[in-house]
Image (cartoon, rainbow, N blue to C red; front, top):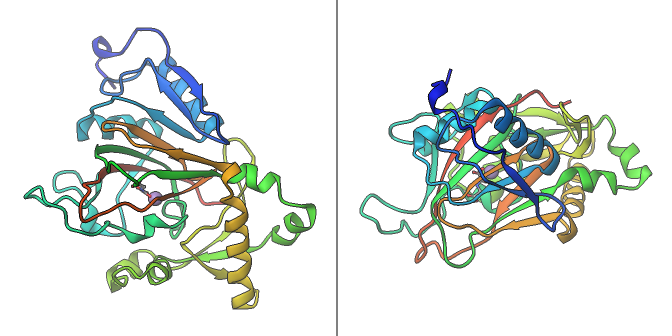
Amino acid sequence: MPDSAQIQTEALPLVKPFDAALGAEVSNIDLSRPLSDAQFAVVEQAFLKHHVLVFRQQPLTDEQHLAFASRFGELEGHVNKSTHHKKHDKVQVFSNVKDDGKTTGVHPELGTYVWHTDKSYVATPSLTTVLRSPAIASEGGDTLFTNTHAAYDDLDAQTKQKIEGLKAEHSWKRSREKVGERPATAEEIAAAPPVQHPIARTHPVTGRKCIYVGSHTSHIIGMDYDAGVQLLKDLEVHATQPKYIYRHKWQVDDVLMWDNRSTMHCVTPYDAAKEKRAVHRVVVKGDKPV
Ligand code: OGA
Ligand code: MN
């Protein structure tokens, strides 16, 4: 329980939707302190309605970051243990900044450059990912989000019927092969063997359907391999049209959270040799997709 003396008693957070298919900025809130139930309820409702929330100027410590994210559920680690923060195993660091302050020259986790939804390669993929940005690139390194409910709603009736009941295989190993990352280790493959999830997924809270695909998919179960790969690609191309996208331009000390059950995301390129970019992420465990 938070110390009641510390609970914020000021006015409720303000929610301002973006002029885009998803996303809203939440202001009049200090994420470094425990939220009252009333404040949290506003954030949670906004999260379910807008799918991506942006909080500006929130210089959080890792402990405060963990405390905020844990209001949404059980926290989880990453399959790639090398991303784990040295002091906090529930904080992951995606950074190209070395201890000496120089860049590594490469973007960490090439898989974030392509459209995906977090940890869809496990049986119970992430509910939300809460990111903060200690270092940002001055050019590029934006994060794009797409509203996969809107994309589902716009499918024609024939396509909706075609994908109903179909499942895709999602695989950590295959995902890394597709982007040319360091191959999955035997330990990682044992921790994250391939799983199958519906392509038309129903949100466990709102009941809305979405297109649940992205780069962690391999193929479609019970369908010719290449035809399945092509259908997954077609659905991704449809779902990532500009009309469904919010582009986040980072500022230092942004906190950004998204619903992995209604969005896909990716990072736009930047010069990883010159520009420093670091995000700390805390991830909340979700349900088995249905
Ligand atoms: C992630 C991710 C995007 C970014 O943390 O899951 O995809 O902007 N990151 O770094
Ligand atoms: Mn991601």
